[in-house]
Length: 328
Image (cartoon, rainbow, N blue to C red; front, side, top):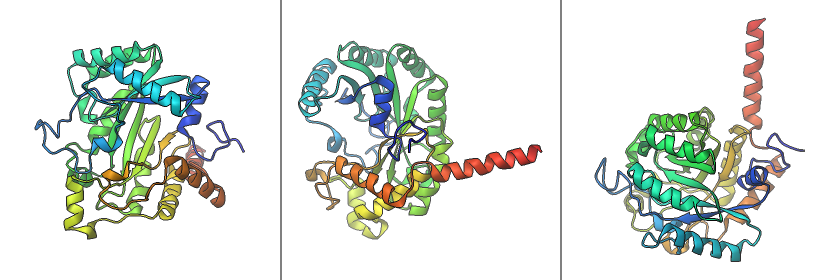
């Protein structure tokens, strides 16, 4: 069966999306431009988000002491050895908030990245409270010639959770930033963490309605991972009863239910995260890689005979029927 996104995989995968968009494999090259966050530098808070340890997700070649061009060169060489089929690259500005600077500095960073001959576009990770219309207008101008995605760390749709993790903004701030981005024709993604303290499985499944209502192109999910030295790890040591962690099997079952409720047009960039064991405060899932988890997700969807959006489509069809009946 060919699904609405154009292939036979049971969810709308990121890799297939780029093959459809560019005609070949794309690979992200991570860049650290040396930005920070407003909940780190005292502008709105200090200490950062309670879960955050950027080093756990940052490749060794990423060093803000190096130029952006140097980091891209090293990243391209690394990935050419590992993924020989990649033909072009996206410069992924991942660490901290990559729009938390003057427009002049942003121009310097992103113009340099896009001038690299191997780079077809940029993916800019940031917070929803670190954009304004002037910055988004700049990214919209870039998007006329290059591939540009703004990826917002939303983390949760629940304000009480956002306050609890020292996020420093509410969900309405994320909604506004996403809408302003989409209105300008810029590709827009969002990141969510599954398993933050205080959120039940029912809440995680229930927030799909709010995610679907956002004009997003892509979504990324990670299971909660506790990293050494973070405030969240200290909270776990003091109050382990506030936390619960899924086995891989339990997490797969939960994510299948989330996936079934997501809009079919949403590209799913990732559904779980991995980090080097030396950063983990708890045992986690061991050395299992994302590729293995993806294979397990494919198998679970096949076993259950379900796919992304099958429940969303049921309700969408019911709403359409109700509207038609009301008109009659």
